[in-house]
Length: 232
Image (cartoon, rainbow, N blue to C red; front, top):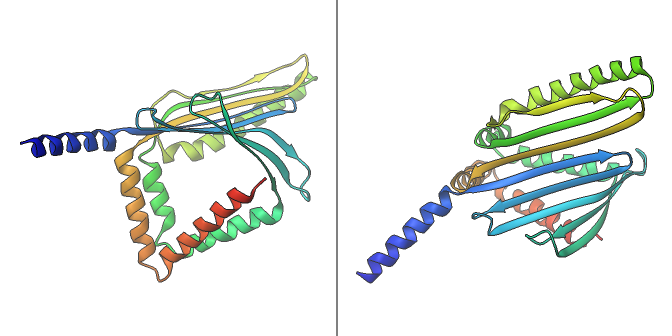
């Protein structure tokens, strides 16, 4: 009897966990020369939480690349757990693209898998507010229209891939009396745990259909892990 009760509780708990959501939030803002980039992930009703913050982004030019400083904080966003610096160069970007091509070559229709997985993501918040001013009213008006066109194109391409469950807050606010450019982008979404596990299983099966596919994925994952550990 007690074994049956324990088993029943375990099964119920498993169903609750599988039916819970993994929630993610992506945030980027730029005000004058100050940048902020943050990613936060939460799972198991907030018991598991990870927040990755990049408070400093310095563009050194196309030849020198980008210098970033990243921080990892605890789930209460109070205690600083880790601080790292990294230098993103053209060579590193090319290397990442090569690894992506290798993964696609060793996985059956990786693009279709990505579309099917993103289709299960529910977008619960989408906010993108930009303020722009060039000090001249006609030039500001023209620039405002151009930014609207860029935003419409980008959102029109990205939104069909996910389930949009919130009304987007998108605006471009002209600042006619001053020179200014600032932007704030926030996107939040969620996906059920059971589908993440199912998507991982399907990805494993797609890689297994090609000779050396699983080994290639493991090797690339180990390389990325070693790079993140050695970044300083």
